Length: 205
Image (cartoon, rainbow, N blue to C red; front, top):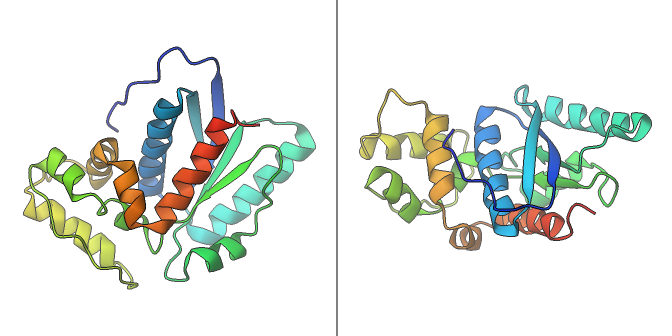
């Protein structure tokens, strides 16, 4: 994963416990967390407790973890749960997750709609910075593996080093993204960044 400088002179370090479906979720979301931590000058440590098993496993493990936190006083400052909307839409997926919010620790859900790969295709300028070649903005389409294929095709067109794993390419893209521009193009990304900023701004109440 590309190294990102930590924010200067933070007052304290905050612990984030995170749950995702796969390594792509881990790399993209961790990169975004670091971007917002720099913006808000808050030092964080992200501890991934699940990065495999799909939607059902992620949600079940997150819920069990939150029960343990409340029962055993294990105390992260924030919990982040990541799962793709998978063509169900942000609102429907959010209802299905049904994780209690407005509690201690606070919970932020990242629900890429329909899939995490779309977020990596929102800012052609960032892609061009990394690979010296951009791409046309993709249409929003709900189809299995649609954005995976687009992203793979963009890597091939840009002649990205095939010896480097896709997750490493993803890390570089996230580090160069204009977050405000990308958020304007995708409501699910905007909701995650807004929720994350709100918690950082409140110093993980």
